[in-house]
Length: 252
Image (tube, rainbow, N blue to C red; front, side, top):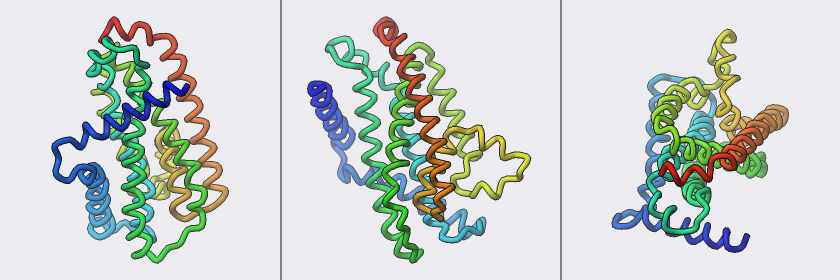
């Protein structure tokens, strides 16, 4: 276990340094993307499209930032095992460790960007939220769910190279059918089943429920659903890795 943790720390730091190498702004470029996306979407949806939601900046923050973490992590992790074939063939290293480094890197960027945006949003909305003390719970659930999904998709991409294209296409569609920049109440009742069968909705919803308009019943119910989805993803990913990890080296 100590060896695994030492390798994880070393590879994560190396991954971060490689990402910022030969850049002037370095880490700023990574967190600049979610900040710009949040700023633009906040103006477009609130001022231009006139979406009437109280404290819209805080509402959008609670949905957009976890979504960016999910999509960025998946897009970076899916091709990683195949692109790291020389490393995997040359050294005795756990393939899952490489994916986990990517996830931790993106998770750190997600947390930094979230708190950088949160501070001015809280100031301008004049909104205090005692429920922030519960935020680590949905954050941990989100991390493990994304870790399971990213590791599963990355391994599948080794055997089925269409995985990255299919998942990218699906995520683009799911962005619009997941209540990220609009509340679920805007969706007609007859179409809500589309959202309710979307597992990513509950991962985002549990996070947003701790950030915006906290209601204990909604928060704990959303967290329970998100936790259940995470358990299913972790179990499925574990057994898939256990079944196919030895075949990995024949396909990379």
